Every structure is written in structure tokens, then in C-alpha cells.
Amino acid sequence: MVTPLKSLAEDKIFVARNPRASYDYHILDTWEAGVVLTGTEVKSLRAGKASIKEAYGRVRNGEVFVDGLNITPYAQGGHYNHDPMRTRKLLLHRKEIERLIGATEQKGLTLVPLELYFRRGRIKLLVGLGRGKKHHDRREDVKKRMAERDVARALSSRNRQ
Image (cartoon, rainbow, N blue to C red; front, top):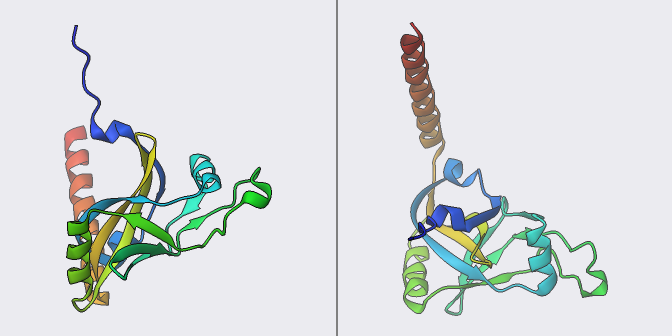
């Protein structure tokens, strides 16, 4: 008897998401990166105590870092606890880092953390390369969503009859 393979979506245990990322940025490309953490940070993440709403990525000296990632101190950590807003290093392959360096040097491109999750017991951060949206772009997105919602309502009411 052959057991079915788990899909990749089942392997992920989400800790935090950035809902404003798709609203504020056009996401051009994404990368999955590991994060260098301490023991109490991992325990706090397993309890779901993190926020990536104000986080952003930065390339410095050929390495990629994330700033503004808030991991709440572990309740039972005592004096071993970590600084909740410290800068954390991201683990990427050299070619990925080189692509990020080239892309972030272009005008207006930013590294935006999208999701923080566990995959096979390791914490991963989905980082997107984004270009900031203008005000009129946001308006167009809202109009598009409203039009799709109206079409869905019309179809559902038509199916009920």
C-alpha cells in the first residue's frame, strides 16, 4: 500500500502574515528564506507571538537582514529573553542574494516580508520584492475587487432562482 504524499501547503504552519503588503506594493518576485533566531525566539514563535506588519528587508555587506520583525519575549524566558525588535539575518543562497542586491539598487524596489511560518520544523520567511503602489493604483484595485464581488453576487442570485 502506497501512502499519499503531503502537499506543500500542509507542511506550513503559519505564524504571521502581512496583510498590507499586497495593498501597498506590487509584488514582483518572492523568495523563501530561513531566519537566524535564538532559542527563546523559536519558543515564542511556536506560541504564535509575532508581527511582521512593520517589517522590511535590507541588504548590507552582501547579506540580507530583516528589521522591524517583532517577536514577543517568551513568557518563561527569564533573563535569557531576546530583544523583540532586533535585526535578524536571513539565510539565502548566494545567487539569490546577488539577484536581490541588483533588484534593490533599482529605483523604488523594496524587500517586503509577506509570511512567517514553520516548514518541517524550521522557521521560514517569505520575502517579496515589491514596487510601491501609487494612490491611483490602490483605487483601481479596490474598484476591481468591488466589480468581482458584484459579479459573484449576481451569479449566486441567478443560481438560486
